[in-house]
Amino acid sequence: MGELPNVTREYFQILVIRELRKAGFEVGDVRVHRRSELPEPQRGFVMELTAPLAHAAWHKRALVACRRQDDAVGRDVVDAVGARLTDARAEVGILFATADFHSEAVAAAQHAGVALLRVIDGRKAYDGSGYSAPGHYPAWLPAHTVEVVDQDAGGLIRARLLPAGGGAAMVLAAFEGG
Image (tube, rainbow, N blue to C red; front, side, top):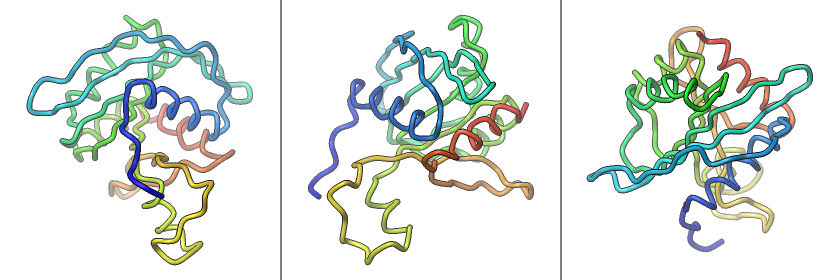
């Protein structure tokens, strides 16, 4: 496996849809709600998508914020996602980011009912799985995958891979935080 592909807007949108479907969500018509460049020194972008999501009897319209940045995501970003729900005509918020989340952002997301997902290198996820010796990757391994970031009952921040099939429950639990 060579170098990781660049996370462009198009790549990010495909990744988000793939991961939500993999987790067990039905994803309806995805629309770009907003796009902008992040100011210096962050060197990245934010793209907001809206889409109807469904899982079993649960059906909601989601605002999915996608942030490509190097610096950790702060509380202000989580607050902005919550504040933009009405403008996007969405009922729930999901924030995907290529960077870590500050502890204040994780606490704010849990309180506001915003799901946090971090985009990670697929090789990192595979190395931590115990399926093989680190550095040996199967051809089917995706370049990127995602982790759900939240707090456990003791308040410690945790990051867990979004599993196929059962991952929707992890995301739905985040919506109940507020």
